[in-house]
Image (cartoon, rainbow, N blue to C red; front, side, top):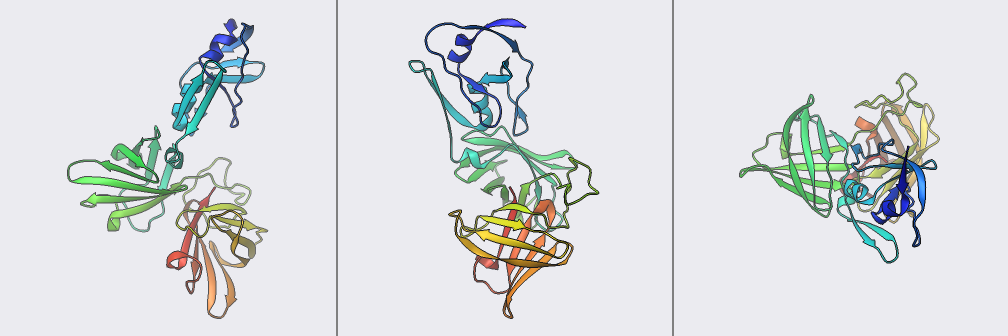
Length: 301
């Protein structure tokens, strides 16, 4: 335990912990408090945030600059009003420090995509196979696209929609059949729907439908798939438009087999559901009416 000047700490720009991080402000004047330094470690999106932490009255404070760097935000400070301002770039917030796994069919040359050190302008990436790095580099961000020229004759382009990333190769294909592959964020198995799974276990294959919200990664006309009232044989669903309110389609789907379900509206129109890797759910129309190419993919939120 050591004495600490709260004024000097906040003047250096301080951000409190938790997901909604409150900022303390002080009028002119010095207040001395008893606090604990360095006890709390802060991790954001899997990356440890650098900078000294302060534990005071059950609340943890960390430097704004360190947190801003971790989330790819710009930070400014107004000394006259004791105000720290964080602003995230619309492009950097698309990309997250996460591990992604492929959902593309075929024997591709990688089983993980790891994105780290995201800033408003770029991020680091690694493609791994059995935890061995195959290709790594830094991709430059432009809105929901990013580009990396790995060499003079080989490059990679990234396109992101939520947690779904399509990676295309420029030059001779080295990793993917057809020169491109799609990856999704790796999530933990839902143990409530899978009693045999141990808590925290991560799996690559899912066979049961689970209640919850799923986000679209490939359509401007639909944003969210909501699954409710799951039983051994049916579940209810809604597909919500990109405006967040309008219902694109809804109904009750019949589970026909493990990871397979369908909702039949008419003899000539059916929507089928396929639950594949990482709780990735594909909706496919028997006749195209709602989705581009007659199908759309959703992933866990």
